[in-house]
Length: 288
Image 1 (cartoon, helix red, strand yellow):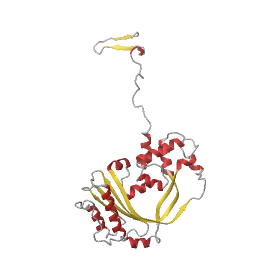
Image 2 (tube, rainbow, N blue to C red):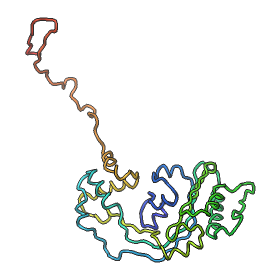
Image 3 (cartoon, rainbow, N blue to C red):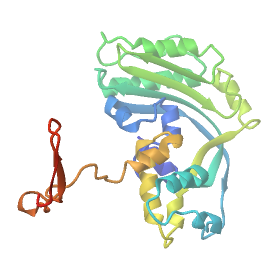
């Protein structure tokens, strides 16, 4: 799912974007989120009123950005570059609005994918028709299977003026997230919200270009590319990025094996003083 949404933003790979984490209510720690997630699905309206995009070709970075690229692995300078200039350049965006219903299923859930798909479709039909049906959920193949209560709670919450509704059921292992962007997001009926989108549109889709793709041939661009990949993969707090990068280089905390001279390689002893705490004389031995 993250790879699908990344493709819409022309971003390679499957590392989730901030947009992906937002609509599915993820924490941003994508490896732990992925481990806990069984299935993801969404239904929604995406309204694009117009598009904005850069027409300049080829894209060229300002000289001050090129000069800011560290020529070696310097965690402080690399962190400063990422914090100042970011990791990607916005080259296009869609303006409009979106009204989306997302479902996240954990591994503890035993609901079959076909039933979950049916529940989401029924919820979407009711959500986007402003609750026109008093009993929106159709029966699944198993007549004894009850509709998870989390879906019912979402429909009841739709009467509250919120731009985002999140309902979670530990029993069923489900999280349902409903969110709006653009228009008057506090209008809970879908039909009335549609009418406000042209009056107050918002950015709903971004097109990106990696900043490192425009730094070809710049000394140190390889180090910067590696630092950015680590930052996107592990998502450390920006203020801790420097310290995070410092621990990405192997460090030698102890002598390597056979590094210290031992045995017959031992250096000859230097002359020393020998004395007795109990005696009254001090003896000097220059041969030991």
